[in-house]
Image (cartoon, one colour):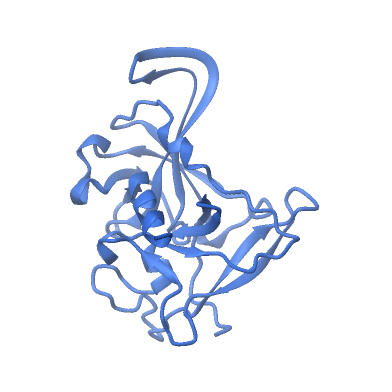
Amino acid sequence: RGHQISTATGFVVEHKGRNFLITNWHVLSGRDPETEQPLCKETAAIPDEIRIAHNLKHAIGSWRFYHERLYTNDDSPRWTEHPRGREVDVACLRLKGIPNEVKIKPLDLVLADVDLALYPAMPVSVIGFPLGLRPNALFGVWKTGHIASDPDLALRKDASFLIDATTREGMSGSPVVARAIGQYMTSRGLENTGKMVTRFLGIYSGRIHKDSEIGRVWHTRVIRELLERATT
């Protein structure tokens, strides 16, 4: 307790009137989802709390850190994993005791249903905090990459797809979006609305190999499945 093990990214989603922090399983557990071994090789430390930066109500760009315990008094996890367990590297933590001075700005999962066609080589943005950087009052850094595998032929039982992006430590748990302005493809064909559209694609969980630029994105359906489990 009180010793920082690592930094990561997450985002808040509101579901059934409750606020949940969405991030990776490995972020909250402190363990490699493939082996279950501690990610902190030097000390084998496992996190027992998480420090979250929340926006404040009184001014745009103002924020403060607040702490959330990860375990109950009997050492049971407060966070919820996916029904398929650590095989899906996504987890959520219900936020409790949020101070009145905090302004929660949840990501709207309706953005996952925006009619914007996806295809390999399409540009996407990974929004997070590479190497813990926070240059703009804790507004995330937008890193650009491209879809590297067909999202309709997803890996791991339709739960994830790959992107090609230069990411860094600290971006685990980042939301991934596709954005188009003006002319873009939809399920109905080519649209030219003159507007900007944004589609939420899922949550980034890191590179599949440390020497590779190829990273994994878990589909939005995984987040919905996770939230249903957390509220039943």
